Amino acid sequence: MNAPVTADQSETQKIENALDALLTAVACYEREPALLPETGAVSAGALIGAYLEKLTTWTKAQRSADELLQRPVSWALRRAIRTLGKRLHEIGGDRLMHDICDRVAARDPAREGWRLGVIDHRWDGIGEWVA
Image (cartoon, rainbow, N blue to C red):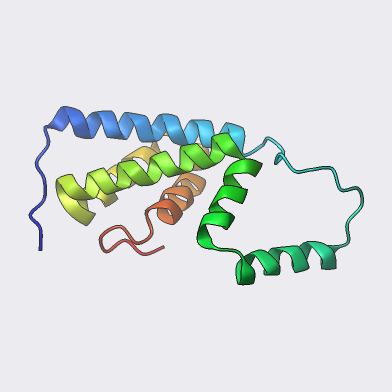
């Protein structure tokens, strides 16, 4: 097992501030419509069929690229949240991740639950973090 990488408190504070800014931006960009080609009226069955095809026949890279192409800014913001979670894990493991998560979520009481959900989903699989 690798020992945690050390960091000074200022790096941890910078990560906390960056996570706050990223979550604020994600909330803004999630309201934007996806950049989908105009297909006209589509039935729910057709949408479900297309979604299932992506799940069963597309590679992980294809699905990721499709998400990026539909919502490029939101996708990039969410990837940045994951990157910062990995760094926090390097610095202080799961305990530091939980502490920072709780503090960042509490910075916006009206969206605290939503913020926890975004972080939880993006940090799934980092260390012992399970969504």
